[in-house]
Image (cartoon, rainbow, N blue to C red; front, side, top):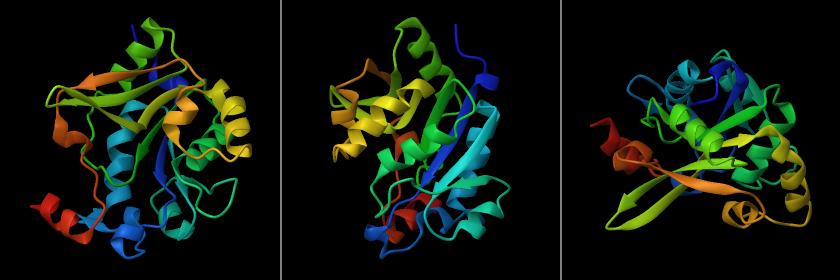
Length: 198
């Protein structure tokens, strides 16, 4: 049992400062002949009804990829949760899936597996995780959420909250284990980008 894709909006998170990449806009960095965000969009599109991008600069460059671009509602590059909020406020579907722009190899069954967990466990949010040396490693920016959590998130952000795990504490959430550790590798530096290209 999983959620039909026509009930799910996709959001690519590309709203950060890219500090560890010298301030570069990570989503626009070239990866195998196209901007990283373009690879992410193309990987997410078959899994959802529509894809948008959350970005706070170079909006025209992202719009040229054929998607609607949504800046953060709150200013000062407030982190992934600000991107979640922007996506939820614009969401026209009952569910929203978020993925970061800097992990262009996430699983092609990401949405399917998260949606199965969300339905079966009656969750507010299901997020990706992997097992590394017997430990659960969470990847919470890869998450599928009910669009109704926007009220909770807006309250949390309004109170100064910025950490995803702290917001999750107020909701019914659970990790979904994926086998491929490399699928969630994210690129934070130019060196990591070069390594992944190889």
